[in-house]
Image (tube, rainbow, N blue to C red; front, side, top):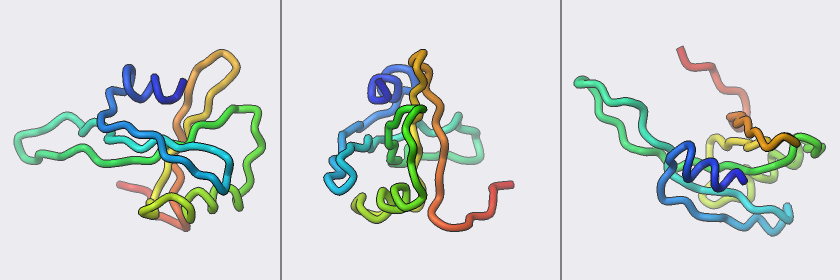
Length: 103
């Protein structure tokens, strides 16, 4: 479900499934569309990692750290694609360690 949402609704490109055997789970790697371009700047799509999970799952900090440590190359941030019972999906961005919020 998360894969289809990223591909068709969010318009991600270069999507591939990444196996994470240590967690008995998969993740989705893909390029998030660049924000609307302005005449001053041109941005390119950036590769991101999304880990799908259900709202009812109990995930620990150790489990989330294992995602950061297992995926190659190690990402500085991941997205959790949390799917609820009514099939809606919410994406939460998680960073490794303490990160200052953007201004």
